[in-house]
Amino acid sequence: MKEKILKGKVWIITNNKNELVPDIDTDQIFHNAFLHITEIEKMGQHAFGNLEGWKDFPEKCTSGDIILVGDNFGAGSSRQQAVDCFKALGVSAIIAGSYGAIYKRNAINSGFPIISIESLEELVKNKEIENKDEIELDLLNGKLKNLSNNKIFKFDPLSKVQKDIWEKGSLLKI
Amino acid sequence: MSKNTVIEKIFKNHSDEEIIPGKIVWIDLDVVTARDFGGPNVVKNFNHYYNGEEVFDRSKVFFTFDLTVPPKTIQYANNQMLCRSFAKEKGLKVFDIDKGIGTHTLIENGLAVPGKIVVGTDSHMNILGAVNSFGQGMGDIDITFGFRQGRTWFEVPETVKVEIEGDTSYNYNGKDLVLKVLDVLKTDKVLGKSVEFYGEPIEKLDLTGRITFLSMITEMGGIIGFIPFTDSVREELIQMSGLENIPEEIIADKNAVYSEIIKIDISDIEGMVSAPPYPHNSKKISEIGKVEIDFGFVGSCTNGRVDDIRKLWSILKGKKISEGVKLSVVPATIEVYKQLMNEGILKDLMDSGAIISNPGCGGCAQGHIGMTGKGEVMVSTGNRNFPGKQGDGFNYLASPEIVAYSVLNGFISDREK
Image (cartoon, rainbow over all chains, first blue to last red):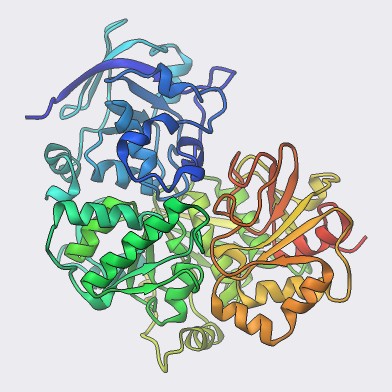
């Protein structure tokens, strides 16, 4: 059985003004210079390799970490590597206000939990979640608990298709 | 009486399920493609999960190589070889490295026609909205599934109706118009939506202008866009597709239900450019001040048609580009290339100082036809100007006309100095 409750440390992907960076496109996540790479284990080192201030993310990240990102995350290209590079690093989930449409499909299809919280920007601004806080994500009940301050936030639980794919690990196992 | 939008009607024709916005349904696919990017992983996935099995329908599955053509590195050469040998084994057609941009090749080969659902590993598949197809970019897992199953899941998108209005004496083109609209819609207004555009100022665009306009739905975060056909657009499509006839266009029902109706007045439109660092940072050319340039680029799935390059030529003909400025031109497909060659346009462009490349995604795919160095400025007809996309410099997006005047003057402009 899949772990239904994920627990991990969060990285809040902010700019130098401590705001969530919106519209991070797939070239900032996984640059087109590396599109020839087809082995997932070689993708992790390039995650955020073109995002100002976060180029050292692959060294900082540890397995099980969760990333919080700005609206329209993963805009741009259809490259699966922009999802796979995070899987390669062991990132367990992504939380954003919204996603690029193709990015969202790619994540769902590879059984990677991505979660939308519309008010994410507010939560970050009001410091209800801070960098490196430990959080707990209850994927099927749509609950995020910040273990550092015990606050609870709601999100839409996984949809049926998303849950089916996530349980099997890939669309290709359906 | 049905009250469906264009996308809902296309879905209805491809599904047994009830089609309601927000609902996840299974839809049948008409054409499933993979490029030399994405394709290698499709092959790997297919061999892993469906080892020894066949694709769902050989006449509907294609490879279209356009990203790195010919391959610039050994890895790309190997990736293309992998796809070719898979295609041979499964009996699939490959539009190989000589053909040009996949989406355009699909139109030219009559594979993307009104009412069809066409998917591929290209985020600008939605240019196919210009021919009334539902084109959708997908990652390699999605496409692997499509190769084998011929169907996929899809959340029925809501539809936004955008009414474009306003009179102007400015002779704008598809790129000016889309950058103007992008300035209003940004990336949040139609995120994840299908968009129907109406109004004389947009319906008068020809097929080339529509391809330009609708390719940038991606940069608005939208799923797909549609503009009602005119008789002349239908004629242009028949010509471009090489078909004798094409299916009826899918149009929205009179009482179709839209999630939102947005009116956009374009009466103050002028030459538009999108300044770095992102496409929706679009501005009137009069607002950006004097921006000196190092590079010009005309091409891409957004502006690589014959008429786009002809516009560049009509401005540059008999003149030299500004000292120190470099200009690259990449026709979208081999058909475009041949026509430009036959008309003598390529020769004239070379005489003006242009570098002409073989057709494909060069210019957007990194490194294929040059990049900017640190701090250098490029004015490009591409569709993205995110940091690092085309080098270490700054990238402004604009129409072929603006690129033409800019390379003549040495700074971004929409007229001769």
